[in-house]
Length: 115
Length: 110
View 1: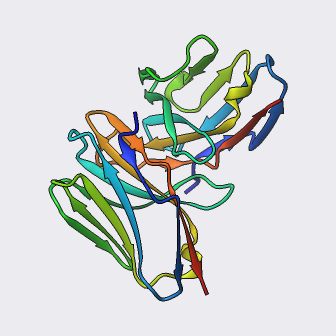
View 2: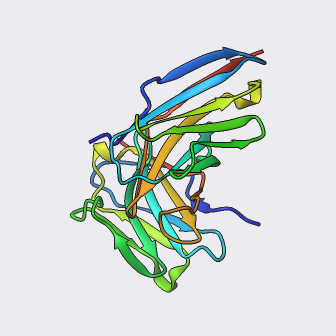
């Protein structure tokens, strides 16, 4: 069974440029998460989807970040414009259902460097 | 606000000995706890979990202990192997929320 797929794996951009990350969850997983992980810290939730619906986006900086999950399968996270402080690893995860006794399965992440 | 804390950023143990990784949480709404292992350039992978109705869960060399009154959980690895060297994240879940600790880097020396 294929795991969570993310692309690109690495991205280097200059500040004020836009960037987009793509995620394809495990087949059959209804819930999709985007996390940001800063160096030396644990993952922090940005947004959680149940199928197509964003059910928790309270931590998403909506002035520059946007996300979509059309058709309830793969998802895209966008930053426009990027700032130096956005340098981090962006992780996508999926699970059968929402938080609770359901383990999340993570992709390898996209390491973003903003210069 | 750090609702899940892993106070030891690193731990080094000898192969064959026990590794004990600790985690504290503050939110009493958390009722499910997980440990993830992360190798460099990979995403975290699920290792073991425990529900708040239990105080111990064992899976092979890995055992998680939960002390609800102290809001503390620990992961025991016995015996430790060099392949266990990784960053271990504690996570706490409940009330539609999941929080991760900052991680502990475990090094198992041959």
